[in-house]
Length: 231
Image (cartoon, rainbow, N blue to C red):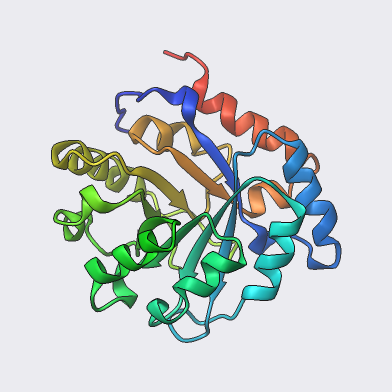
């Protein structure tokens, strides 16, 4: 596998995806995240239109907000997300990410998000090149690289996402953008290191964490794989 330069990995953030949590015991799962070294909580909102699945909306987000002080990273996999930006911010979102493929007037939506006081992110589906963000990159707080096709948890990681992260890191540097790079889909202890080396700042993990016998240990292992010195 091609190697990349490691980029100041002590700041890597693990963001457990509650899409993979047990909703019969959501309180306990959030408490687990609270007690762990995870920095963010990732919340996938699906509408059954942009993606072939429906997840949850404002009531679940509000409930999670009451249970944690961690950063709430809200990923909108919905059409016309501009209709609901204020509502997601009011429900507790700290960062709101919309899909490039779901937005007609991206510049406008980025400013709409920022005007609520939230940070703004844009997600790219696996086949969407990072170059589509060349003009708006300086406006962004985060770019989310999807390493599976969006809509369902538990999918296999798409290997070319690593090269895509590296290409995005170059684009952000050349455009003067300070946006973080987030990766979502099939992320776990087996590929965390390679993603961090390519330039990822935030790793979203669902099944790898909530399917683990020891979720807090898995979070720790992912962090260590990105921060330890290895040849």
